Image (tube, rainbow, N blue to C red; front, side, top):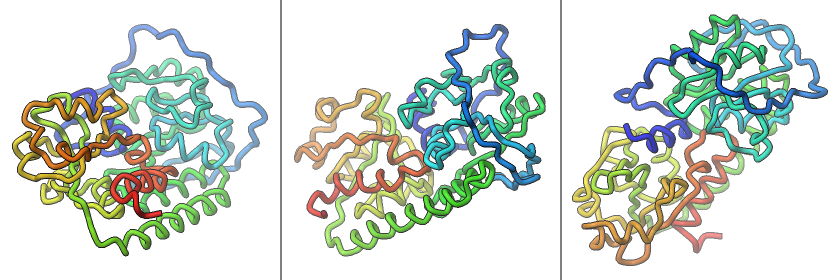
Length: 324
């Protein structure tokens, strides 16, 4: 699997079963730790004795939770949206929002191995893993006598995002905040979906996830939450009939699909509409011929967290700029 797609899929919080992550290894040497921001004035949270996480695991939780580590960008965003960011002592290397997380220690590497010595030294009360986190990583952290709670799964929906926020809120003593956040998320989502139901034209869209090899780009198919988001935004995924959430397709297939619009979810990695226009064989595609190639902030549309409504609005703006 290309490294770019692995990063994109990490953001999405989903796992392609045929691309399992390699088993995590204990580092032989401890990397120089980044500056750790110790939590200050963190209120003591009386946690439930145990919780059932997104993976169906029953996890025993310490009575008081004041220090947490997040291993996924979506979960990091949930924690901060619930007002509990001051309890975060470390995050994965791909968590980059909100901006203040830039000062938090990073405990993962580009190959998704982890610095277990640093995790042990930080002594968190709870580690939040992701649905895609390698089970070996979960086991290694649990061997340090640190409880690990899995947040998120491969079957992402608006409802599951709300459930994940509720789970995090329960652990961090932020039940009221979680209820307020999920209520607003659902209300804002429903408002946009209702508005888009009145749209009569639905452009055909090619969603580009990774074109490291432009002749064989990765896209989205049936079963991807991004496909559901695209439909909610009033578009038609040209590869929605492919029974693989993240298929690799040929340029010939893209040409034959004749998309009206191409959305570049890999724009954060330097891909631009001009680059697409210069690709061999892409010049006959309607989207390329009619200046219908658009970049999008993939972090908004691929992270199953509190910014997903902003992601839906971003797609709507591209597909239906006439809708206000």
